[in-house]
Image (spheres, one colour):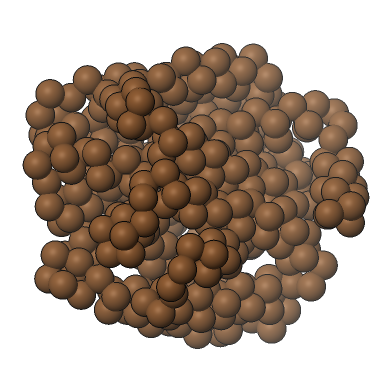
Length: 410
């Protein structure tokens, strides 16, 4: 534990100075709430299903709507980040997400709940591309570590928020749990607006050179996409992440439901087990970004994805609460793939269309990945819950092959 503490302290020390510490803190806290709320809905699915009388496929549709709308916003969010600056986009994302939570919490019908899910997907969808480019610009020499800390914060939110919800839902209900998070989003939106740099100050290239303050037109950004996307390593990493996200979405959307309905574990205990997924993710993300900076992206990505395959294939064979805690913790290490892939791909994109290109790629990979929850829900309704997790392991194996094909010096 002391070694981990020293590693974290040394990493944080290298990321401070010139106001960069505030940038990292703001972006990380915003991601903590954004990602934590996205995983709150899966944790509350048993109650949502009861309220609206849903089957697994319909419940999975709600999660897919969140991720699908999130995906569709990635490309326009990238364009907006290039044109308006990261500060405006991040603050707007947090404010819109706060408003969507009111709609989710008050939904009288499932169709209204779906509208709230779509609104949250749209609001939170603005966050990803601007988060990535703001970190890449602020930390050009150690972006892997900055991404790792930010995504670890998201994993922490994904662990704590659903855990608290699982323990409290029986007392206060799912509506109050969702609506009660609105003030936090509004506070962080204000923090983003006051601490992140003005657009003209933030527009520096990853190599330290000046970028023009003049925003690209949409036409120019679209014309620059083919140049940004013809890089073989960018394509391979994006395809790998697409398969990886499909499996991750299917896993996280239905793991709490699987534990409750298939394994007979009480929801409060299932919430604790589900939280261990994100504890494992947070711990692994803190170290993996620095490891990739030191040892290279390709070996790091292959190793993490390989472990993800093995742990997914073990899901149908787990038995006993202690075994589940350990396995789900290990399943969480798959989340370490994100900081490495994100920083790797963003660094390869041309600086003048970095936001637009990264947003376009995220739209593609998240849109396909969002269907993972519908896939698992449909398999579960057909009586093949176990087979669904085995299939997710096979999908992740494809990602391992893609990562192995990256350039040797990656």
